[in-house]
Amino acid sequence: MKCPECKSEHIRKNGKNRHRKPNYICVNCSRQFITDYEPHQGYSDQFKRECLKMYVNGMTCAVRF
Image (cartoon, rainbow, N blue to C red; front, side, top):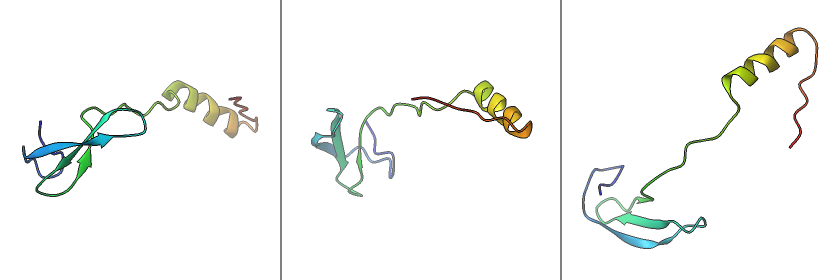
């Protein structure tokens, strides 16, 4: 495992984050990180296009959560 900032292999465990994944810290640059990041889950491109099309036509795009 390497530090994403300085690419050093001198790292150690540093507890757990709020999602219960282990935190690591680089001894060289003190950067904290986790091993795997989850990709951002946003709206699809198709949904964004439909909303933009509705906006241009004067309609509303109501999204319920």
